[in-house]
Amino acid sequence: MLEYDPLSPELIEDPYPFYAKLRDEQSVFWHEKLDSWVFTRYKECSEILRDSERFASDWRRAGYEMPEMDHPSLQVLDPPDHAPVRHLFMNSLHHQDLDRIGELVASESADLFRQRAEAPSFDLVADVARPVTLRAVTRVLGVDTPETDSFVKLADAVERGMDAGLVPEARQPAIEARRAIDNLMESWVVDASGPGMLGHALRGRKELDIPEGTIWSTARVLFLAGFSTTVSAAANAVLALLRQPELFARLRADRLLLDTAVDELIRYDSPIQGTSRACVEDITFGGVRIARGQSVMVLIGSANRDPERFSTPDALVLDRKPNQHLAFGRGPHACTGTLLAKVVLRGLLSSLLDLSAAPRAAGPAHRELRATLRYPERLPITLRATPEGQSHE
Image (cartoon, rainbow, N blue to C red; front, top):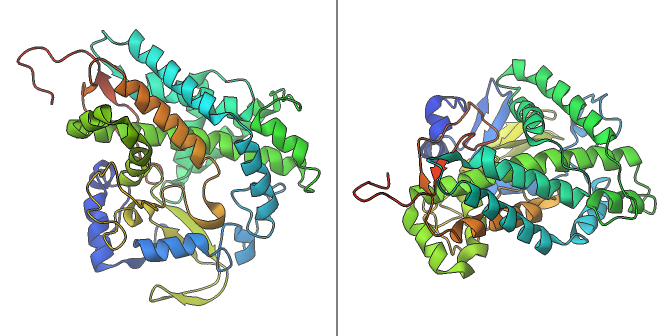
């Protein structure tokens, strides 16, 4: 029997060959340390994400006590309570000028790249992806942008807390970081008549009888997840193109590929590798018996490389259609910030494609031991033209 250790160095570097073995040899299995059933194939993973009646995001429905959930966010509400909150926030998002935000991402990224054009190397994640993403997310929310480095430390603690089932000592720092972010949010002055998403949601909540606390808890989720997931997707995308420069060249030659390329880059190396639900009733599913209250994990990274769903799944196919990947979920809990993440990623990639010299790796990508969120925390690159006689490696 295969032993799935998501924090092993081999899986941190490249989990996809191991995922293929899991799909072939034990596509569904019980993981003692995660205390969860793990599903690896697209069919079952997609069904779990879409079936909120049997697989709950609100763990109270499966018998868990959640005293901290005084004002549950959109992330943990299930239908029918979920619908009005999602409708309000999606409506608020569509009221934002996302085209303009994408233009600003491209412009700001281009400025940062120009400032570093002659540098021997710089870190794409710290120097570009994080600051432009943080500004984009706060613009959408309609609030002031915090200082990047201090916010990154808080976001990092929350990200590590996603793996608390495997690393219990990460739980308390994550709780403290969320409190600090709550304190930061309390300092926000929201213009209720302004164009921002948060102000729009606060104005519309009364008509839908949504508690103000739910608006703020959902805003925190969007703030954190919008930042972390988008930065991760951007870092993964650039790394994939650095490793396959012929595809970067193809994008430069045909910008019409960008829309499909963004989705494909997200599928190819998913920022979120897995997510969990609670089983609401005793059922047989995927060939195993699952008891009420047991956890089921959807291994998104594996599902997005399933050959039963995607032809040549291990290839980066820039014009792949259709491409119904699960990187941002599926069904009622499909990520509300998906559209923003794609806008940011498209803007950043556009600015890279505009550069006179193609970016090249300037050292190995560095990954921390993370299971849930996958991305290189440091990605050194250079924009200098290749000196004569020097390889692109």
